[in-house]
Image (cartoon, rainbow, N blue to C red; front, side, top):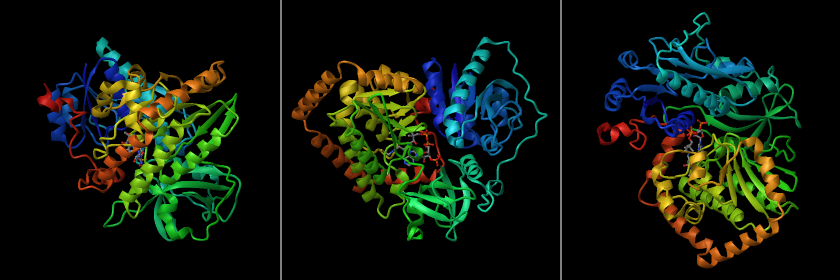
Amino acid sequence: MRILFLTHAFNSLTQSLFVELTTRGHDVSIEFDINDTVTREAVSLFRPDLIVAPYLRRAIPEDVWRNNICLIVHPGIKGDRGPSALDWAIMNAETDWGVTVLQATGEMDAGDIWAGGHFLVREATKSSLYRREVTQGALDAVVKAIGKIEAGGLVPEPQDLSVAFRPLVKQENRAIDWARDDTATVLRKIRAADGFPGVDDVIGGNAYALFDAHPETGVKGVPGQIIGRRHHAICRATRDGAVWITHLKPARTAGERPFKRPAAMALGNELDGVPEILEPTWREIRYEEADGVGYLYFPFYNGAMSTDQCKRLEAAYREACSQDTRAIVLMGGGDFWSNGMHLGAIEGADSPAEESWRNINAIDDLCHAIITTETHLTVAAMRGNAGAGGVFLALAADRVIAAPHVVLNPHYKNMGNLYGSEYWTYLLPKRVGEAGVSRVMGRRLPIGAPEAAQMGLIDECLDGGKIRDYAKAFANAGDVPARLAAKRKSRREDEAARPLAEYRKDELERMRLNFFGFDPSYHIARYNFMRKTPASRTPLFIASHRRMGGK
Ligand code: COA
């Protein structure tokens, strides 16, 4: 089928759907919902058999939905209607939730239902549920709906209009009452608003939106007060415990469009005198051991890795290498394995160019430590998506595995034509050959894990639940000493052919130009990315109907 995606952005769900439907042989093109005229133009250029709206914030023009079947992905169960479906589900502590695929009509979410499914609601942020359960549910439901449409003759089920339309959640619904709310309530409120719009609150007389909260059970204090800090996170007391908050977004002002940044960076001097909590019950980087394998978890918020986070992860990695184990598995986070440098910490720095330089060097140091590990076999186990430098960081490991649903964006170009580092010029050709390098770096499109395995970018696809069995077998096979010896030999040969330092030097020379050179593209792209500047047109690499006039 010719399927046009009409979407607000090429977000994670849209990318997963794009990968799924193109893999199934559909011809998919994408148009951002910019205005009605542009939408009509896209429809007439592409002449789709079907329009799918995976992530839409506005109504589809009437002539478009009347003349085409338009399927809307709604992150709610049958009967649920309104723009804050997941927010309400989390705030009301629903345990069973779902996704429905509805046909667009004149009324929001009121059209007939083509397909849908249910999932159990994890204790997680809205965006985490969206990226995992909702995305999987949407894939299943859209595929099912397309099957029905292709089969023909099937009539969709009417939406249950007896259930009331639920309005947009407002900040007054989200507000935290620090004196009254217990930890569970505070967490639920912040998670229901995370990644967007956050919960508005006041710290030291200034307004911020709060993001990425985790429970702390080891300390107590006056509810609402900042009672401790740890690295970039702050710890605030609740009625019955405390919560860590890692990211803040300052309130919008007349002259500045704010963006999220690490909490300690946002608060600056405000934290003077706040004690460091040295033994917290929540840790950003976690290490576990089982069956001769060390597992390193680093679920950094949004997969972004600041200079400090890279350094701490490198230290944790080196510590893991000093243990009496045979393999180390780099587990990343459940939502994202890694998305490379922390563009928010860079954007908020006094000198973004200098901070970019520090950040890329810190991530390169971490890569170097992984590439040159001689004592252990290493595995990068991607349970969540990875982008840009995050993908190449994974390639530093001996084995790279990814869950089948994982979507990779192994390119830097979308961030203002960044050249990229992380030793990609060493790591990528080893995996995909010289011909594969331009295919991977030039294409700018997301790649699903199965395709990545097929092209040799990763070693294999494996369900997240099977990682431990895989690692155990890998680390306890009789040939581990032989494999380590082969690894040392191959590294020595590679080093003799061209030292790692040279790859790094060449990459960083190009990055230096990106950061400090005449062309400001990277700084402009980062500025817009962090502030979510709406797109004014759909990039041609995803809008195939606009290339060659749709032919
Ligand atoms: N630094 C800071 N924040 C980042 C980030 C990074 N490297 N990568 C992603 N994020 C944030 C986004 O701002 C967004 O924030 P939100 O919670 O306010 O919505 C969130 O992570 C999710 O990102 P989004 O772009 O909506 O996710 P996606 O699944 O649609 O796309 C990527 C994934 C990786 C393609 C996209 O996030 C991206 O291009 N990231 C930048 C990668 C990069 O250039 N890194 C630097 C070079 S190494």
